[in-house]
Image (cartoon, rainbow, N blue to C red):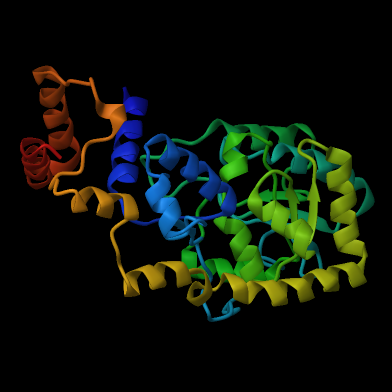
Length: 338
């Protein structure tokens, strides 16, 4: 039921919206498929703009114009077990079930035997929102590190949560930003903001392959991308980053070149263009020109008649979640047929 409700809500937005934004070209292809299924990609929209960028364009999460500033010592020589001259790999965010830190943990077991001065630090573990349950991957990660005998030797976890404005101190005291994930559907369409943090800090990146930002790492020479679950390749990537100073510096220089392209003043240009000249979509314009005041509902809704019990359940749902005022808005929308 939840899946159906979410799908219907998305379909409504896609059907009635005039302009859409997403984070990457892969996401844009996905949403173009959805828009096509709802009839939004048609001779009118194509005739207005064959690229369809007037219908949907790429506006990813951006970076501040200001460079990160080191305001306090937070990691090296501060976290017990991490020395001031250690080479630190930073996992710059939470541990979630759709990621795979296990390949890194296994790699660090081999690294310990070769370069015990290389340390892996997980920036966040527990989510600050108490309503978000601890995910299974957290326990798997900790248990694996302990069972391999490297927990708090060269693998360290921050079980609290770092303030957003404080994260720059951890980024600037680290040497490499890391992220690993399986190659599945979430990865394919992901746009991981922690990787943007690495770019912001000009921090060379080690990532597994499969998403648009790992493609960027390979194409622009921002670091190294390895196959999922390939422990040996991960070990080689870590050792190369720690040992090959010329390669490391080339990654930094490439990051310095690429980083300005992700600043908010750059990535938001398609949205700004639309806001400076807002327009209704070509297909909606054609429909309104025919003299019909109401835009017909999506075909996906045809035949889905909702009974009285459905609206009663939704009423109590909104009361529990949103209070009287929002519930009143919901009732008004239902009465208006929206």
